[in-house]
Length: 115
Image 1: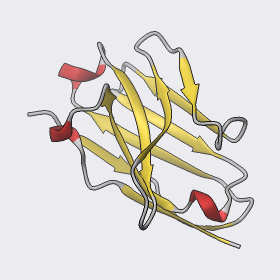
Image 2 (image 1 turned 180 degrees about the vertical axis):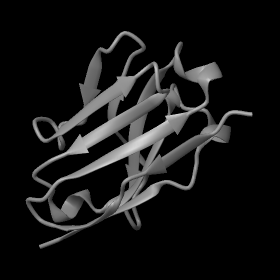
Image 3 (image 1 turned 30 degrees about the vertical axis):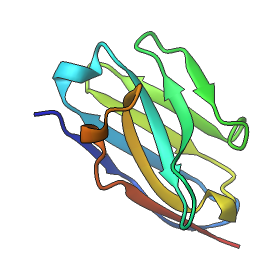
Image 4 (image 1 turned 90 degrees about the vertical axis):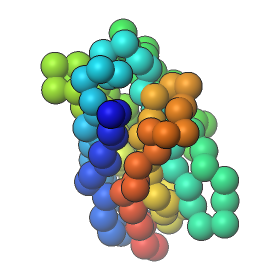
């Protein structure tokens, strides 16, 4: 059974940093692109960043230059380094394959940025 478990969220002040981590089942990780998504209260879930199995990356315009996605294929983890955080980054963050699979959505990890 595929399982994606997010961790690393928390509460920080604007300008601070957090590093999120997603642990994935080995059967899907090595061959799939992976993405980080977020959902703020009252808003739709949106893609924040994605990384291919070979390491190519894409970012939402709102996080370019501040967030960095990376993966460790040996450890089956994908991480999101978030710097210069803003209050508008407050959301629950989720990881999933790219394209997403509905059954893979986990509990997510809450990120709260105060001004």
